[in-house]
Length: 403
Image 1 (cartoon, rainbow, N blue to C red):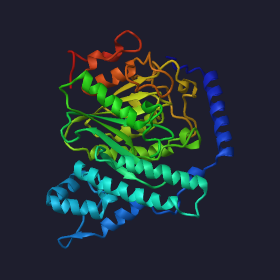
Image 2: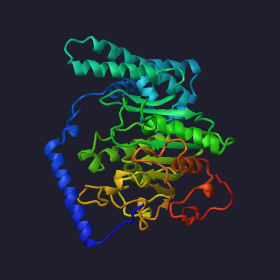
Image 3: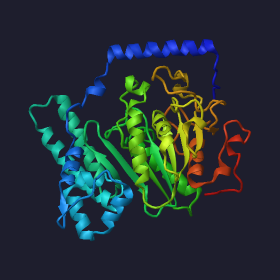
């Protein structure tokens, strides 16, 4: 681990380096990502508009962005047949509605994914598309088919652009503890799951964490969410150097958290740019979020853990081979993401990742980082391995495990 050096000379050098990098990115990529979908109505927005004009029993439907409590009450007042009818008529709307029963959201998103798959199947034979367009349509068709399988529990789905998706592993309704994996750059519906280097993708991360939690505490009912329901930056461009994508992602993350069923405690696992999302979200997290663990973080848009404005415990880790340590840990004029979360001055509980490799190896089975994540997720805080070998990350805990 490298410590945070606050010397004026180093900070000036980092500022110049950061500005130089941004000027290069602006010259080569510009703000195209910002303009990419301007003026285009998404299928999800179309579905929400249809819902807003819908009626049941002669009455209008509740606002789709209303409070999860109110929406939950609305759905509970309906029969199963009526709920299924709404899911079939407005699949994208219901599938993304925080407060709707999770099983209903799974059913609705299965319908929405099948509809999206059929659209891509037609695009494959569209002569107006280039060869690249045909290949993209084929890849998306296959991915939508895979996600719509009966064994998949899709909590959110939006086919617009690069796509957004969230998937649940475990029983979310009955879970005593819930973990949420928030990924970083280059996360799209096509990279949501990988066969090669699978533990670097959200599905692989979440499945690995779920298995590790069950092994760590077999009697604890857990659920893990692979949450890629925000527009992540594409590559290390302008979006990755600012909080623009994180600002929107934080709003969406908090909305999802407030819509979770039950009262189980929640732990966030935020990788790379995902830690920027979690850092921005931290100021408004619901009280049920007990822990935020960041790995390979470029910063959390804060100079200290206390500056995050959350009561959740903040954990941080970075392995010695992670290139992210060479990123300037600073924020100047909106560029950069603030102090290094594993630095001694930040104030996070720094945990070991000694056997993880590179920037995407933190969720690999058998690694100390994954074991630590599982112990945090199941409340076995006294078993967490600290990075400094001084047990400082376990201060304040008593007993072998605690919820």
